[in-house]
Image 1: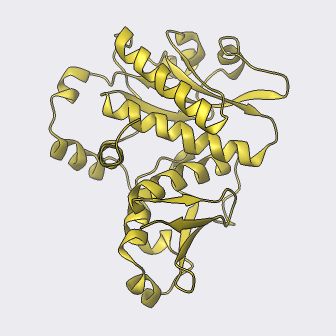
Image 2: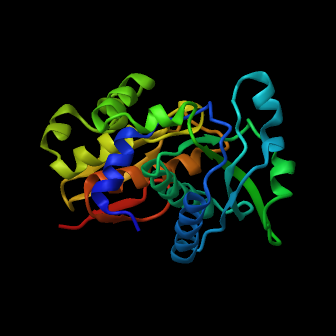
Length: 261
């Protein structure tokens, strides 16, 4: 599995990619991705699946220009109507996304820009399961020039790539005094979560720190209520955990993070 410092690097350079090269993912990279997915599925009891060379799944989005040359995807196949499963799938699929980022691949979380029925035809879906989300994956357009960029160039591009809510917005349940007094690990966790992808770039998750027991909590903004919110909660929690350095989350809205020294 990828080292912690590398995951921090992936968080700092990952962007949402909508335009891809036509080149297929090479066999070695596909094998490494499959190994990562298999390890995650075993660890987390998830059912993530890598599907290659199926452009028909994104035919409409490619034709409209919303996507370009999208053909591969990671399918999130999970039990229907299981909130914790959706959160866990977001958490662990984003772990795969970060591993893919370190291999020079581009990714994009999609909820509506794919043909769900066509995608499901290429997945293993058990009784009571559904393919409810996917991550587009492939080489970014002009990927050789992309891969030639330095780490500093990639982080600079990320900073200019999209707007983000402020630190104060991500910690909306805290006062300025509480923010200033929070430990460095909490601040680093929030800053990593600020770089997390979310459906429609809504960034619906906030964090608080409780000095009494030295824990953090993740909350879904009550003003945000859409299909992918629980998925976004899992993604944000993963980014926070990596940024904080060490620790473990409890699942669910309001779940606590226990930091480990």
